[in-house]
Length: 66
Image (cartoon, rainbow, N blue to C red; front, side):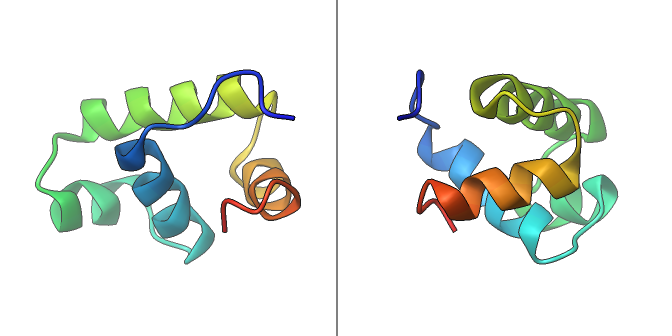
């Protein structure tokens, strides 16, 4: 089970990562700064216990987040 649930915004960022969007593209789509997107990504990685976008996608699918 997931130690910490992802926030709705984090799930949105994870879905865009899974769709292959770059951090810059995510920033533009969600009207955020690049730094904010990176903070979200790092938070997602920490909560999912992963170190990369690819691992985050795999873990997100395993947990039914994607």
